Image (cartoon, rainbow, N blue to C red):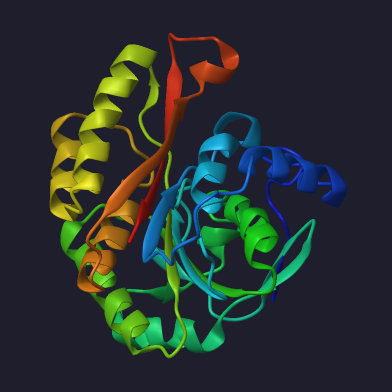
Length: 269
């Protein structure tokens, strides 16, 4: 199965040379200090002109492994609530990226809630937009995509625990990437205030606290389920620190402060 790009030419350039230039602009100057391995991270998934600099602030700090688990929201109603793909490859303007068959099979065995499902992934952009960044910084790699259409805390905790067990048993490192934007379509002032509440819980490595904050304060963080799952797994894998490495709103690009989307980049070690 070759999944063709769903949002090339819209969220990011469809031409490989232009895409390379866009990513280099988003990444900016290389880190002066040595790169450190990370357990997980959270990156935004809007169009590169809007959230690319925040995504780049994460990716330029990573010492990338050759295997990834990408977790993001299912923006469309079709498909399974916890959808995984285990075979084939995803195509970007830089070329195909193979799925990690063995890692995906281990995850399905560890978490029976996961269902093999192409429908949930075929139009979804949240994971697709991460791949060109990973191709740029990691070169050749394999990955497992997981799209979440559920907000049931127990299910997210079960998935996070399963991911931790599988990753811990692997002989090679695996990075867990949660794809999420922050609050949507409220004023810049209110969005920043709401996002601060959610970011505080992520920096505290508190998955249940993040889940509760999103619900209690009506934070329209589209990938909070992915972030909760990643945090559960990261804590089980021994994470002790989380760093906010980038934050912006769409208003920083458009100048419109009345209805913005927030973007946060966080690295967890």
